[in-house]
Length: 63
Image (cartoon, rainbow, N blue to C red; front, side, top):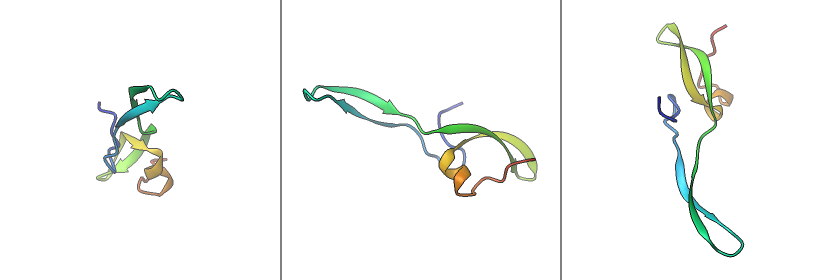
């Protein structure tokens, strides 16, 4: 599975780590994904969702 939120599509972002001496090295920042049992299309599925979607109520958790 990819490192992508199944609700909003948020994925990794790329850039540089910049040191105090202005050295630049490539780096990747990953979204905070959690595996959650949620109700989708009337059935319970385990999906990878970012914490922003969980917090804002885009996901209905299964009990």
